[in-house]
Image (tube, rainbow, N blue to C red; front, side):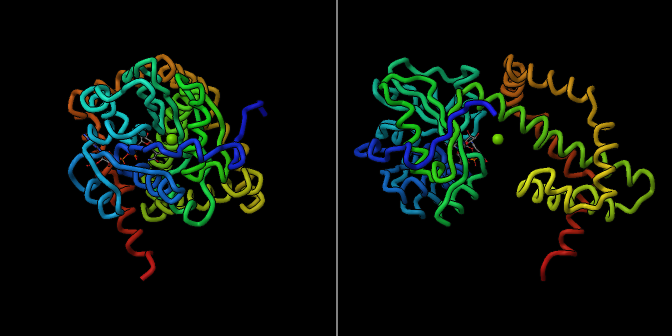
Amino acid sequence: MSDIKIFHDNDADLSLLNGLTVGVIGYGSQGRAQALNMRDSGVKVIVGVRQGPSFEKAKEDGFAVFSVKEAAEQADIIHILLPDEKQADIYKNEIEPCMKAGKILSCSHGFNICFKYIVPPTDVDVIMTAPKAPGTEVRKTYEAGFGVPGLVAAHQDASGKAKQIALAIAKAEGLTRAGVLECTFEQETYEDLFGEQAVLCGGTVELIKAGFETLTEAGYPPEMAYFECLHELKLIVDLIYEGGIQKMNEVISNTAEWGEYVTGAKLIDAGVKAKMKEVLNDIESGKFAKEWMEEVHNGATVLKKKREDLGAHPIEIVGKKIRSLFEKK
Ligand code: NDP
Ligand code: MG
C-alpha cells in the first residue's frame, strides 16, 4: 500500500460553502446527480446548460436554470460537468470571460486542465471532485444515506484553501461518507484514461468479442456463445467486486479455477503488458488526447463509423434477441 490519504466526513467542513453559489455547468449523468446531492446537503446550486432536454430536466427538478454564460457569471464555484471533448470550446466562449479573481473552477475529470485545453487564469482555484461511479449510482447511494468513493485534487490554490473547498464539495456530494482519495489532476486523468482503455471498456469489449467470434466461427450456436462470453461476465465481476478474485475462485468450480491459472496467463501474456505500457505512454505524452480532439474537430466521423460497425456485430444482434427472450415478463 502507498501512503495515499483518505478523507471522510469528519475531514471536510461544509460551512466553507456558506454564502457561495455553485454553478453546475451541464446537467447530464454527473451534472444532475451532483447538483441534486449538493442541494440536498444545503448548498446553493444553480444550473447552466444549453436549451434542450437537460435544460427542461433541471427546471423540472426545481433548479434555477440559466445559459452557461449566465450561470458562470453568477456562480462563485463553476463546476464544469460538460462532455470532456466539448469543454474547451464552451470554456473559451462562455466561461473564460467570467473567470474573475477569487472564482473557483471545478470539474470531475482532469482531461482539459491536464492536457492544457483549458488554461485558467492564475488567480482562481482549480479543483476536482471525481465520483468513481456513474451519475445514477452517485444519486442512488446518496439517497440511501451513503455515497460512492471519489477523488479530490487541487491543481491551483490561489485562495490557500482550494483543497478544503474540494473536500467540502465532495462531502456535499456524499463522497466523503464512503471516503475520498487525494490525488493530482495528472494521476486522475492518466489513470482514468488507462483504466477505461486497457481494462474496463477497450480491453473487456475486445476480449468478449474475440471469445464470441472464436466460438461461433468454430460452429457453436451464437446464443450459447453470448451466454458464455458476455452474460456470465456480470456474475463473475459481481463476485470479484464483492470479495476480490479469491472470493470468486471459491465460488467457481475447481476446474474453472485451474483453467483460470493455466490459460489466462497464456492469453494475457507479457506481450499484452508491453502493449499496455505503450498505451500508458501515449496517454501520458498527450498523444491519445491530441488524436481524440482531432477526431472531434473532424466531425467525429470515425467514431460514428465505429458505432455503426458495432451495431452490426453478431454479438449485438443476438444479444438483443436473447435479452428480450429471457427478460422478466
Ligand atoms: P453527459 O454527456 O451525461 O452530460 C453532458 C451535459 O452537458 C448535458 O447536460 C448536455 O446537455 C450538456 N451539454 C452538451 N453540450 C453542451 C453545450 N454545447 N452547451 C451547453 N451544455 C451542453 O456527461 P457526463 O455527466 O457523463 O460527464 C460530465 C463530466 O463528468 C465529464 O468531465 C466526465 O469525464 C465526468 N465524469 C463522468 C462520469 C460518468 O460515469 N459519466 C464519472 C466521473 C466523471 P444536452 O442534454 O443538451 O446535450
Ligand atoms: Mg472513469
